[in-house]
Length: 266
Image 1 (cartoon, rainbow, N blue to C red):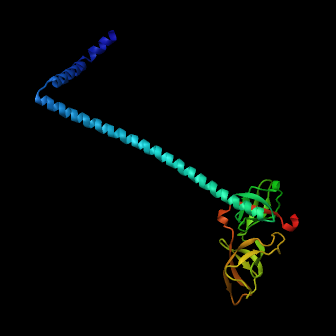
Image 2 (cartoon, rainbow, N blue to C red; image 1 turned 90 degrees about the vertical axis):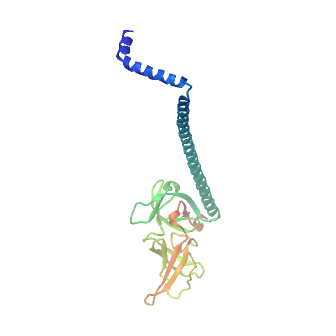
Image 3 (cartoon, one colour; image 1 turned 45 degrees about the horizontal axis):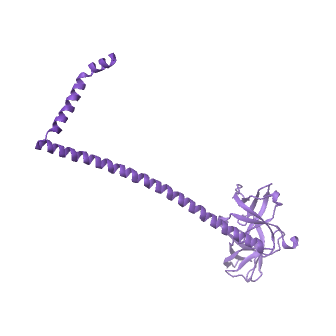
């Protein structure tokens, strides 16, 4: 009680001033004169204006929060749609692979591409299959589209495949239509060349190039690519035959490793 008395005494001037203001406002608004009524109207309008702006701000905040929720919901739907599209594409790829495997006479082991080779001197991919799948070095790697390469390093559960686009890769090949033979090797970028084909051989743009079967590694008839350019230089003994691979190496995700050729499997 004593503390309250001291507090009241110390602030009595402020309290007296506040009481006077409240009393004055009460007197003003209890007066019914024209001037006071005008002040009341202005005060009411001003108060209403402030309340309206506060309500508008609240509505804006509510709309903003609703937009944020809608954006979040839209983002979730987009992600879900992307997942469904990816699943659809993966399903289609797997259907094509299964169809290829069921129609092929080769003994095929499926493998997923899990990375690119880290060796800068060899253009390669890393597969999730290895010795545990009875894979060994130099086995051919293919897809439903054609030749991918061959295994050159095999571990227990992973292996590395040297690609057709590697500068050191070689495979015996033939023109499917005319049976002209040559050696496939890397040329530049994503293209290879059919080398060691004598001049005036029957080779045309659009011809399909396949494995010849003369290789100890690759069975015959596997697609390699199509001829896109044929030239002959006067000073050369051989034709220059540019081939576009059948496989799109930038989109490799699943492949097959050929364990045995048909004659070996029978």
